[in-house]
Figure 1 (cartoon, rainbow, N blue to C red):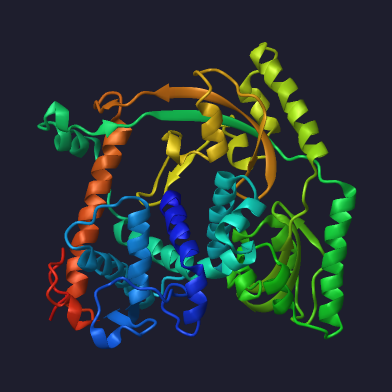
Figure 2: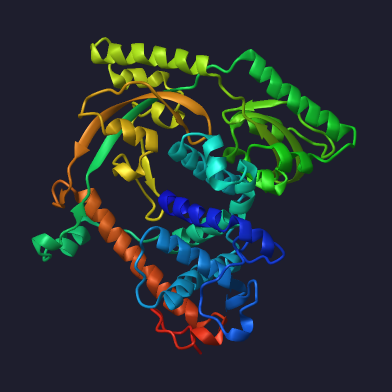
Length: 473
């Protein structure tokens, strides 16, 4: 999924200049581009943008279709049938899920959206090498990227939650897995791609006292400006916060305590006066100041400003030297990688001997096996150099919290591509059956949903051959 997001971002970057021309027109997902290559009536050729479909109360703009078309061209995608018909249909299906999410009161918090945006931005940074290179490539600041991505990621989160709710009760038994594959010809069995299992140890280089003081002084300045009535907390968050919630003035939405970093939650849930600004809080993401908006039972709505201290090269080199010593000790048998992983700063892998976990969000599956393209770029680059059991040289990467860390990895296992067997690949085959059952349920749900959902489309699409019957009425 991240790969799809990256390709979409390339498309959005390509139309960034034209977005400004249509900034007064806002659709359901994001700001729109003025360009359009969809067939159009001659008397409409001067229209910057227009609604061409409505599904429930969700509009689809011509520019929505153009962005998806550009995405397909960027990756060499072949559309099934006429792309002028299949592209808007795909978008319309997404609108069905959004419409149902609204009916079922499915919610996503600003903290959920913010984390997804930060994960994506950090992934892009890993791919291009630095924040500066990313900003140069996209011709946007990180803050502008966050603002542009907000609505798109909110909708993606809603669709994902809606799909998860629809398929949450589907299960398959071992007998059903065996029956699914028992009569299948050998050459029709699933091809299991090459996968790897990787252990990792990450350590964050020490931030200098001078840099910490700089960040804290800036946050104190923000607090003074708010308290003096010079500006609002929300305005400063939009301008300076390094969190995905910056575009919303730092607002995180009504969120339970468990969803927050413990240090952040301890301060946020003790705020009582919306006019006051909290003390400076250090969390695993950086340094914050917080302002209360409202509280409803066990959920709290706050806004915050996050600043992340930068790390100088000397500190990075020092940490890489320490990890190099550790790697040599592991290779020399003085300590095992499993035991050494307990010193890792990555809490997600530390308690599992450093073993990285791969979450397939679309199929709701979690596994230790990665295809190479699913690994962080820097990790994949090191895996390419290793044989199973070998430990890498130290390297730097941006972790999912946006921090620069130093790391070493061990290639625990590599499994070459092969046809699935029930004895060796039962979990993979079970996942195939489970994904098939879920896909069929969702396909049937779309067909039924169409029968009871308001749909309006421009006349130009009424002669299309669609995958689903029911769009044209």
